[in-house]
Length: 403
Image 1 (cartoon, rainbow, N blue to C red):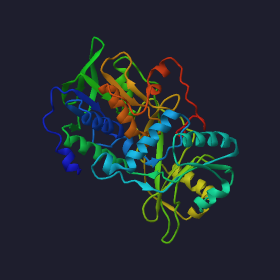
Image 2: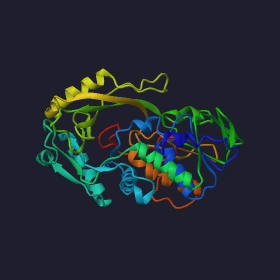
Image 3: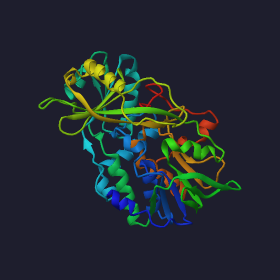
Image 4: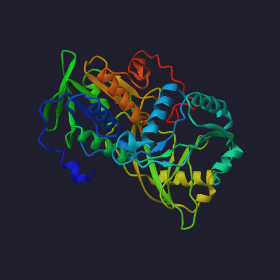
C-alpha cells in the first residue's frame, strides 16, 4: 500500500469501536490483523505517525530460530514459517524473505550452551545442526576463524522486510473491515473501576472494551499511567549498510558472531548490513533520541571486519540508521493482560527478538483476547513472572538479544 493509500485511511475518527490496537509496528499490525481475521468486531489501529516509523522499521530483519527456551523457539519456528509462506498465510504480496541461511559462531566457553540449544531445536523439528569451525569455513568462506570453536547453522533461515510485513498485515486487515488512523497519538488509556473503557488521543476520546498496547519503546508511560510500570529499559541499536567495490565479495549468510559481537547480513548486489553489539548504558526513557548512525559505530565495525571478515577491509559505509529497542530484565517479551486493568492487553519488551516472533505472538495474543485456543502456550511470557520475580528463562549466551 502506498503512502497516499495509508493517508487515505485517515477519515473521520470513530467514537466507539470494539478493540483499539495502539502502535502500527510489527506487533500492532500483526495482532490487529489476527483480531480482525478472528472476528473481534470493529478493530481500530492507531499510531502517532506512519506504520513502521518506530523501532519496527529499523530492524535488521533477521529470521532465525536459535533460542535458549522452548517458548521463544516455538514462536520463532511458527513466525518464520509465516514469513516464508507469506503469500499463502496472509495473502497480500510477500514478506521479502531471502533464504540465505543463519550461522551463529561461538567461542569455546559457549560450545556446551550452543549444542544444548541445537539439540532442543532439533527435538522441536527444526532443520539445524552444530557445525565445527572447519564446517563454518565451508558455509561462509569469508570468515576468519580466530577465537571461533564452533557454532549452529540453520540452512532455511535468512532475512525479510519489516515494512512489507507491516503493510501486508494492515492491507489484509483493512480488506476485512479493520480501520486505521495514523497521525493520531494515544495520550492515555481511560480506565474506570478497574476496566479499560477507551483511549484519549490527540484527536479526541475513543471508546472501546478492549485495548492492546503494542507501542514498542513508547509503551512504558501508557502502562505506567494506568497503575503498572513494566520493568522495561531502552537500548540503542545502530545498523549500517556497507558496500564493497565492484567485483568484491559480501557475506552470503546471516552471521551472528558470538565472539566479537558482530552481526552481518547480505543485502542487494554488493551491499551488506552490519551491527556491532557493544556494552552500553541503557536508557529509561526516549528523550531526545538520535536516529542517525554514529561515526563511532562505523569505526567499531571496520575494526571488527579486519578481525572477522578481512575480505571486507575495502568496504565503505553508505547509509545507516539507529533506533531504540525495549528490553526486560530477563530479555524476554511481556505478552498478555495488563495487571490490574480488565480488558487491557500488551505486547512489549521484545528485547531484540521482535522481528521473527511478531507473526506468532500476534496469533497467540489475539487468541487470548478472543478466548480461543492459542497455537503456542505463551503463559510464561505474562507479567506475573516479573512482578513475582520468578522468571525461569535460561540465557545461554548471557543477557542480550541472543537469549
